[in-house]
View 1: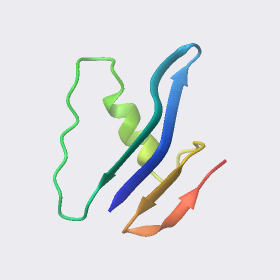
View 2: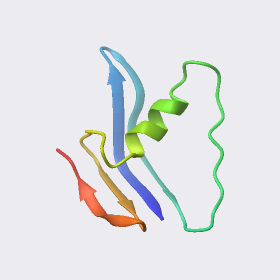
View 3: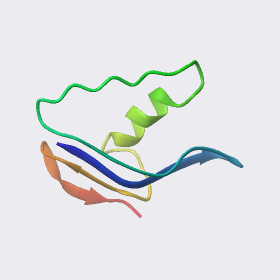
View 4: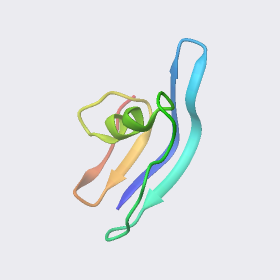
Length: 68
């Protein structure tokens, strides 16, 4: 399971995501679809545990963590 709460990310004044909540259950498939430059790769990078962000992400593969 992957769960994001209040996920936000911006470049200067442009928000790619603001206060987004979602969860993906174990075994569930998910597709990220969008035009070039809309933040698909950025979202995947934000969900990686070694990246720094200010939101709580939970994963069934690792303990829940929050980097502030």
